[in-house]
Image (cartoon, rainbow, N blue to C red):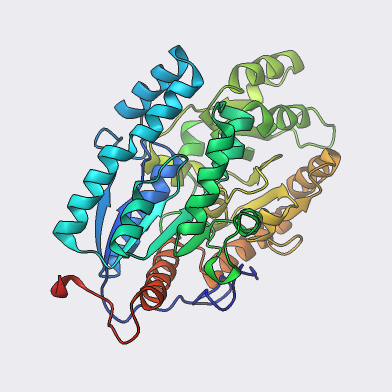
Length: 426
């Protein structure tokens, strides 16, 4: 069972069968600066849909040039910012990010004036301050969803020039939120270290649509289309970077203990793919590797159901992998690193096989063990899906938790004896 960061604050901690509902519909102003058409967009759209399905009014404040759907190429805003970052010094792009707060603040204020929301819900982004400004000025409760420690992440991977300023603003933004919603316990620890009080932190991992990513009830059309009807399919999905360990899976195909009919299916693309193809050619296993490229989001359930084993050699230590929830919902046998963020949702030998992250030979042995044991694959997959459902790792459950935390934040924010404002009182 997942242990939430704040048992008192979390109205329905993961591990409960059903998240509670709020007493009345809320008007929620949802603010984000995400222009990517990837897993971030899946998360955003799913949370909005779950809140609306529960009867809440959700007003979205977002970049006007952002991509509209969670599939296809990056949106115009992302392409523009990408071009600027490639051609200008790093600090120029970061100043532009800070300047974005001016039109964002204007947009938020107009939406607040028109809809008089009960609460502001914001997906945290680096240098994004407009939501904090509005919340402080209008005494509006602010829920802050935190998916990554972006100051450290960008400094380590994407490049960051104004590092000191970025870290100070990040910590200040977290501290000024009414309640912080990190997606993993390691991330919750970082939020706590930034000075956020324990009672204002609730861990809410990613979710999925368990009805959409259900186990296969008939042969996968993807397996037929790719000629993998009789194969043992080891799968990996997503944007594949060199540190994801795809090369490890390719080398594993050459292990004498690996069944001859094992096939590696990579659903996605990324900078690690060219080197992976070269390695497969060098080792003589190219016919046993299929890379599909980026697929439409609507097709992903069929691709995931084509897997027999979902194996991921490395995972960021603070992430809540979206695809992990999809693997669980599809009832797959899963191999993941044994680290705190993965233990938020999986248990070794119960719902998955976990291996020490610093001992990759254990990863190899776990995959080989599953490859040789169909009964174990089946039992782990069934247990993973059952745990996902009972623990409430679905978008619907997450939406219910968010709404309940919103009500709590409204009670804290409102002056004593004053009922929370709703739309009819605006």
